[in-house]
Image (cartoon, rainbow, N blue to C red; front, side):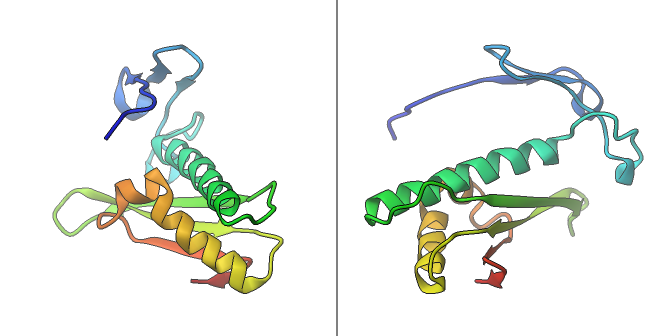
Length: 140
C-alpha cells in the first residue's frame, strides 16, 4: 500500500488524561463517561471514534457517488458507537451507521453498500466489529 497521509496522536493518561495530535490541531481532555463510572466532563475515545467513522463514511459515500456520476453534495452519517465487555474478559465495540440521502431508496442503498466496501474505517473493523447500516431509516 502507498501511504497518502500519516498522523500521530498521543494520549497522556488513558481515559482520564489528554490526547493531542502531532500538529496540535486536536488537543482534548478525556474522561470516562458517567455510564462507566466517570465524570463525563470531557470527551471519550468512543466519541472520537464515532466522529472519525461518521466523517470518513460520509466521504466514502460522496466518493462513490462521484464515481457513479450521481450528483450528491451532502451525505449525512450518524455513527453510534457502543462499548461493553466481550466474552474473553476484554472489551468490544458496536457500531451503527445511520445515513440520510436525498435519493431514491434503491440508489441510496447501493451507494451505502458500496461505500462500506470503500471506507477505510469499514475495512479496518471488518471481521472485528459488527457494523449495522441503515439508509433513510431502512436497515440494510
